[in-house]
Structure formats: structure tokens, C-alpha cells
Length: 81
Image (spheres, rainbow, N blue to C red):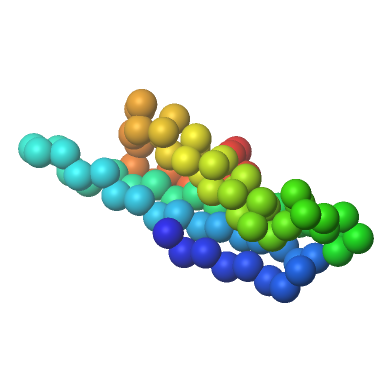
């Protein structure tokens, strides 16, 4: 997983690249990206860049789990769509 984050008040962007390898079948690939932006004025103890990172990683985990139910090669999602 590649993670990029910018300073407080900037966007938190998370990218994931996955390959599912199964015996006797060709590998299939998944790419997902999610991002979240917390305004500098809204950063508080419970809304930090770490909480934004957690939220986007949780969302990507859900995207990947859904894809694994019916893996199709070359899927690329942005914010779950």
C-alpha cells in the first residue's frame, strides 16, 4: 500500500495495489484510491490526520473485500466508485 499525506489541513490520500494469485488461474489486479480532506479549522483531538488516514484505510479494506467476492482483473476504484 502506498500512502501519501500532506500537512495538517491538507488532503489524506491512500492508494492500494493488490494482486490475487490463485493456483491454475491468471492473476487479477485491483487498484483503489480514497481521499479525505479535513479543514484546518476542524482539526480537533478526535479529527486528526490519523483519524482521516484510518477512515480511508477502512474504506479501502471494504473495497478490497468486496472485490475479492468476484475478482475481475483491472478494477480501479476512486472513493469506492
